[in-house]
Image (cartoon, rainbow, N blue to C red):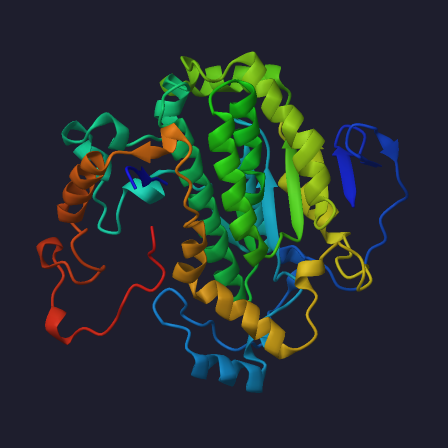
Length: 407
């Protein structure tokens, strides 16, 4: 081969305190929410915590078959769960205020916050070395490409590779979130997630930033990987119109955004339309969905009150809502848990060979230059903990491995 492949809806308007049903854009009023007996609770209502098995140290310890058998026998996995053992995703357009809100929400719900995945996760290794420093020594096809470069040059050949890598970063983070939930019983709040990544792909495609061929590769990867995941319980969408998005971009003064060639009115409007017309409708067939007008921001406490009213257990076994989270016995829960402990196995599903898209192909010569430089960079020669030049000691007697570092 001549090349190498690279890689139930509710709309809440706080000004009227009403709850309406979108199919988002229809604006019909629904009946009031019934407060269920068991639901997500804010820290004010949670009170003293129940006694649970201690968290499993999934970041440091391998999850073995023997451990899984013990968990089935003693029901250790589900004994860690409570009403807040859920996946919550905060989504919305650029500059919507997702990060600040998601952090506050995680604190209020006593859940773990996962910040939005970025290309820093790919380029900065576990020793803190930024591999983007190697760009001057690399051919253009193998140089780094992140969101800042995309904003400045959205027609660059590397855009397709960048967006596929972003998909992988979000997928990797979502696996980590599920592993955390299953290992600790603690719920998670994610700032964006892998399920909404396609919104940006579609907007890129509509604006000519991504080719039809690269888009088809993207969806091949989605088809090959998403079946392994469990969809979120709740998605919160912060609705901000394009005019407000543009004002906020100016106010926060990030030069890459303010002077961006990518963030045109058409691109920003396409993001909003795809979110509302595709993503929100699709995800609402499984997850609960709360949509807020966030033009003037809002109060996290009010959102928590709305969340506390949702009965996540009201659906029957044949309903598509919450289907991923209905399992019959401890064996099924433990099997799901084991899947997310084996992160490298799941990441291998991205190995879908496609050699028909030019912008995803590099020459063997360029690849070798990249490989030789990266493999000799600080902290890249050996597994984490085994790089003497980075200060690691006691290497000859070590048995501990980094089981989750796959990117």
